[in-house]
Image (cartoon, one colour):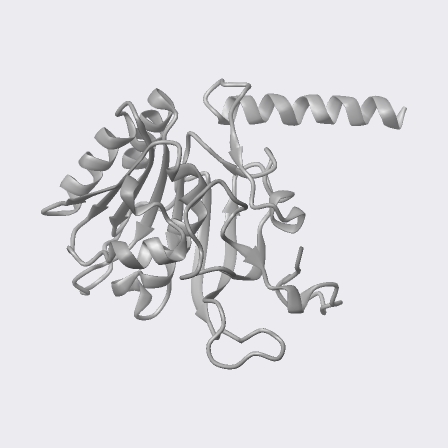
Length: 262
C-alpha cells in the first residue's frame, strides 16, 4: 500500500514540475553537484528556462557585489552554452574579475540601461533572443506583472534569467506589490575567507547563502566558496561553487542554519 502511495506522489510531483516549467516535461536543471543543495530543488538542480532572484543586505543593496559574484558563479556552466547578457543601470561591471572567478567573460555582452523600465524591457528582449543562454539584470524590483513577462520570455527560447536586486544610486526603496514570479529567491552575504590547512594568506572567496524561496522545493542555508577562484580556467569542469568542507558532517542545533558539505 505504501508503494502505491509513493508512486502516486512521484507522479504528482512530476506533473507539478511539468506545469511549473511551462508544460515542458523535459525541462533541464543545473545541479550544484552537492546533494545537500540539489535535493532542495524539484528537478535536482536550479531550474533552467525560468528566472531567479538574488538579493543582498546593507551596502550590498547599493553595490550588489556579493549577489552579482554568486549569480555569475551559479550561471558559469550555463554561460558556456551560449551568449550571456548583463543588463546594468550603472556601468561598473568588472569583466576581468568575473573571468577570475571562472565566468566565461568572452561570452559576455554588457548593456547599460537608462532607467529601471528600460532595464526590464532589455532583459525581456534578451531572454527571448536566439543564442542567449543566460541574462543577468540589475534592477531594483520586479513586480508580478513584470515577473510574468520575464517568465514568458524565458519560456520562449529556454533562456534563464538571473535578477540581481540593486539600487545602484542608493535612495529609498520602491514600494511594489507583494509576491514574486521568481522560481527561486536567494539572499547572499559575504563571509570571511580562510586559507587551507597549513596555508597562509587569504583563502577562496566565501558567501553565506540562504535559499529563501524555492518553488516546489525546500529552502536552506549554506556556507559556500569558489574553491579555484583566480586560478581556474574556464572549461568543461565541475561547478565552480562548492560547500565548505570544514563544516562537513557536523551536527548542528535545529535553530541554526543548515551548513553542510559535500
